[in-house]
Image 1 (tube, rainbow, N blue to C red):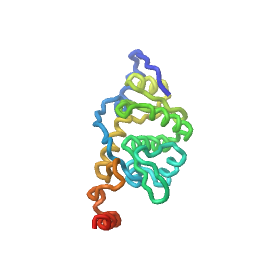
Image 2 (cartoon, rainbow, N blue to C red):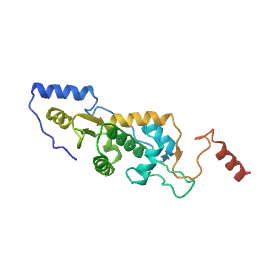
Image 3 (cartoon, rainbow, N blue to C red):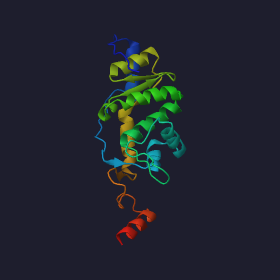
Image 4 (cartoon, helix red, strand yellow):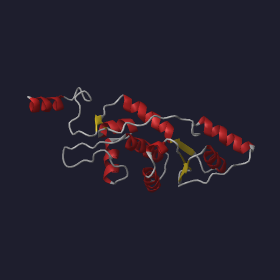
Length: 201
């Protein structure tokens, strides 16, 4: 999955590949903020932020491709809670699937990404030729793959991070440490408000 970094010679092809990578936002110029550690997101929120269906989310959780790391479903009626990182990986899986990468290759890439620290993820660009997935951690690696024809498309995780962050800013989250979400997080959840009123009341 890793790519060896090669300092290529300044050729017209390399210059063209470098320009193309810069235009696509693949060259590690994205600054990201630390994700919230104590916030989890329910399934529908994770789906909206990642651009996937609930059916995909459920299937990927059951097949252990991307499982909720904040809270797993524990029987009927319990809610999964996904972390920011989980949603980032969900969005990457969706993009790789949309470009025709096999589920087997995606599973390998996701396993590799799980081993990385959260901040490390923002410094990775995944490149693919539609068959294999390559991890790049420097601009030279991206340019080398583009120049060699192996990088047909790329996903800069720093950019995906910003997209997920923007989406989640508009969507409800809840504190991971509690089973009883803050009513302000879901002000229109009438059932939760009634339960809370009965318990306190």
